[in-house]
Length: 240
Image (cartoon, rainbow, N blue to C red; front, side, top):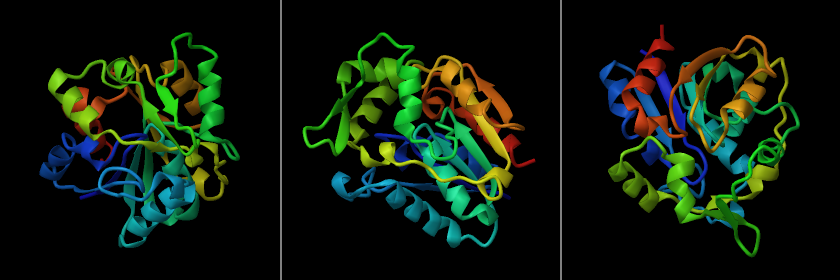
């Protein structure tokens, strides 16, 4: 039996894993899906959220575990699981990046995102608040960016739950070392039809690191909705 800790990406919450959790549990595994501060059922004001808020919450969960976990991060949460791994490498069996940002030492998410922005001609999906503390989403861009392969019912339910996204974590550099973060096995699950993080950028990121295990999904940015059985199967394979 393995323990999976699932960390959602920007604008989402623990609710995005609802199609994944039952299959993992039926296979005999434990699953912990958390709401990062300011997301889901955690109502921390967005103006008070930073990267440390995220890593503190995740670290508190890992510290309660007696054994190692398989730590999964989607999208933005790639930074969260990376920085947490630097703090608690002894608690993590594998790091799993699900179409996620995989940063280098001293890199911010906004730096990585700007590298991709040069390749895109479409208008931004994000709307930055006047006080520059958070970001909202342009409704007309959400389906195409996040849920291109998803059925309409899932898209409607997801859009009802999307929240404001704190901006401060995007500008905070991670601090990673080979001795701690670098010693943990990494798995990258790439998504070929992703319009939120292009496959080109995904590959640029994981190619910066040696010895990643790569899993390929012919999927949009939200395989937990669009390809839940396939994604669950890949997660289970990681326990062997």
